[in-house]
Image (cartoon, rainbow, N blue to C red):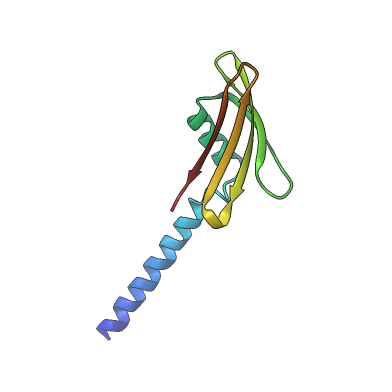
Length: 100
């Protein structure tokens, strides 16, 4: 009986952690979370995103006086989102955020 209770606890905990993991998978994030992470990672203001067919986003933002254009790719299996950003004054960055 004690073993069965512990097994049930482990199953419940695994379910909760599994749900949390899905919620934190940047490969499945919606526009709001992606926008917040891009703003934070690239120090951008005035970020706008457009969802792309097949996943990911394209967008623009400002880094001081420089206009930045970026593309976001999402990979749910890798728990990862990556970006390529290019500015009109020479800014270039490739980066990613992933949860393992």
